[in-house]
Image 1 (tube, helix red, strand yellow):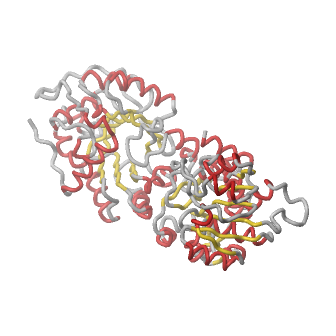
Image 2 (cartoon, one colour):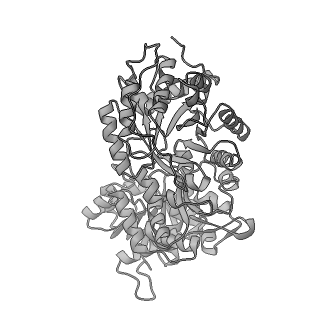
Image 3 (tube, one colour):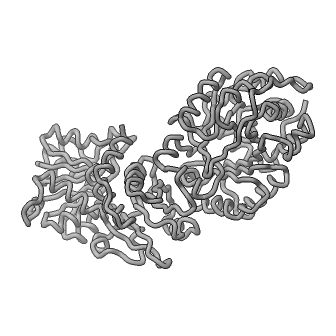
Length: 578
């Protein structure tokens, strides 16, 4: 019996990998690949493969999905689904299969797949499921080589033992071997610095890799720069290709922009809930929403900056419009903690990143970081749009929230056919004093309305009220029904998915406040509890969808200089929420 491969990294790295395995993969983490070869010390006879699998021959990044099944029968069904879903490459995660007979099962699965396969038998010490005899695991990988697999993935830490276990010199020699060997390294804690990443890549090449794969947990989005730099720095290396994968939500851009970055492949789940790693999008999203196969190194990038950001529908809205306009551009979600650091990063601050939408909680900070500010945005004191200025001169900030929100409210009040806004002389109660709240408060004041600002922090409500010429009230007064008006506007995130049972203003306060129109900036769900109860009180409700589409349409024009297909943008958001 050969002992499991020793880790050269820290004990905490091992613990992190094990914790990830159990947490991310759930009940499957209890399964063991109790292969009939597990106790064997003899080389198994491999069932003949129908033919050698082709290698990926595309000109861009290969869309890859992982088959994660507990039995060979289930794996065969998922292979068919993966091919029908448009996968360029299918990874067979055989460490999930209970009772794997590598000599029999691997040729069967490879023969069932009409696209190239990667055979991966990941051990627990690197985030996988196999916890048995290491020699048995390595021999199983060589079974895949003998069966004609296009690719086999082996961990860098096991590479010496892997090549030592080769059944013949012909298979060991890359010049005479059909299968391409991917040597991989996973870090479940952080993205190492650029020097360390370069060293890992060099060790993979020196250890015999045809293709190098490096996956790392991204805890700060600026660390994606290190992965992108590695791809640029290793273009002339002896490795045929390199794969980089940023794990976690903050690392998602490395997957969504994989073709632009130059990665050999990127992974997408077959469906929501079938992810094989944290932060993994679906195959359909990679192909249809982010259009990874169409990306080039020249593709321009825009995105939405926020914290949190996973719930945003902005990518669905903008990417469809970019495609309709025939632009080589992609719009991505950006989980940002420190806005200043993000904008100054060598990757996201480069000229290829032409503009950003800004959402909670960065709108006021964005104003501070602008080299130029639109006069209206400066008066409001918040920006939701950053447009890159030429020649590295920074960003110009705009606020497209207030025009869209006020326009939606005016339309609900009968439109604005005359010179005088229907808001003129009305009382508008604005809940929230953040970026969206500032936009609504100033927008209403511009139209001649009396503005009352309500906020959880009364001091912030007073500051905004003083700035826009309104008055302030406490949240307690509003919720007790002591605040009255004509229009009620919620600009907070209360009631947003997944907290759909929450509301910033109880039904009794809506009814007692005498409001005629209720607006909610939350657009997911379309009908929030606030809007539902407002309608029950006889109010006209105004969905945040109208504001969302309107402000995004203006952003699109600022980013691209073109007019967007607004109907298409609206449909894209609705479809994404279906």
